[in-house]
Amino acid sequence: MVKLQSKSSTKKKGFFAQLFSSQNRFQRKLARDGALPKYGSYIYQSRILYERNILQDVSSTLAEKEEFSSSTSFFSSSTSSFKSSKLSFVFSCNKQNEFYIEVRNSSQKTISTEKLTLDDILKYQYDNKRTFKISNGNVTFNTDEFARLIFKKFYHIKE
Image (tube, rainbow, N blue to C red; front, top):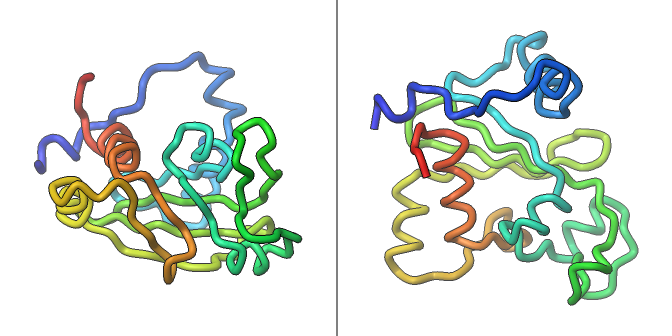
């Protein structure tokens, strides 16, 4: 596990694609602030996670903290009518097998932080749980797709 997590899993991109990406801006800001985690940190908008089927649902109580006018659910039933969101999720790893998930609002203030271990994620998969919730049950993730994202970003595994 140590060897798998110590290597970078980022693919080579063009210079300009890297220079102007949101991930690069996020990494530079963390480096400037001196808060760059040892094994990496990645930021995703909730819209992207929803389109990739990683994020299943965000409850209306969390959406209200973001000042949205939502009735029962943050997402509509069809993917094409996704409600524009300013929520972002930061996945970071400072210790091996410990992952922190931060939910941030549009002004980049942290709404909640959750700590997950790789054992927790693999246990959810072993128990055949399709989804799991964080942030007091306000955010629901797809277990298999979430595990795939974690392995892709934080471990050097060839698919």
